[in-house]
Amino acid sequence: MPKWSVSIRASLVLLVFAIPAEAVEPPADVEAYDRSGWYVGVGGVFAFEDLGGDAAQLGLPNPPYPSQFEPDFDDSAGVNLRGGYRLAPRFAVEFQYEWLEGFDDYGAVPDLEVDSHLLTLDAKFFALTGRVQPYARAGVGVHFANLEVVDAEFDKPWEESTGFAARFGVGVDYYLTPNWALALEGSYVVSTGDTKHFDYGGLLFGAQYRF
Image (cartoon, rainbow, N blue to C red):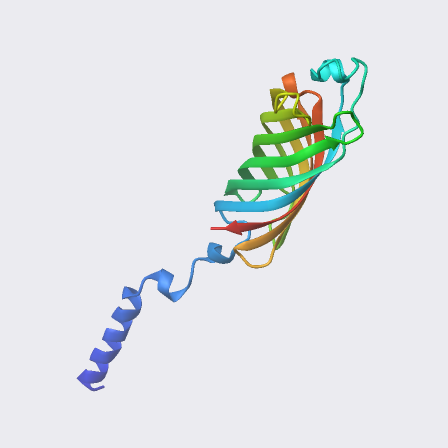
């Protein structure tokens, strides 16, 4: 065999071994839906009110509200922002901020409104790890609720309440690509302390980006 042929073959062998493995074949986890890493998400929320308590328990002024008056609040809507880290194929830790525009009672005289801000740190558990990922979540955090008497005669807000809260929910992430997913989730928020009368359920539809 000619010496030049041997030299070419030897050079090709050395070149193959010199090329990094990443350049020959991309890491498998780049396309995996259950890979570890950071993610962020945003969504719209429809909130089902489960607010309770009479005027005295809510701290409403008397007059104009009798002590036994029980407000009848409407449902609300708002925005949910979230960010988290996928620690394992079936487990993630997530931080959430949820703002609700207002639970209103237009039948009260004057009108009443409750604005809600919720911050929670949640654990997220996945039942499946493919393109479709059903999950359950549980978390704890802080709930801020502002009760407003919609009348210029009264301070705005009339009452500011802060309490600990727990969130429980189930949902599903559907991956359009390895980076983009849609999310549908139902959850319930249980509040304690000063916000114990401001529980609510929520239905979220949103989008999520995986880094």
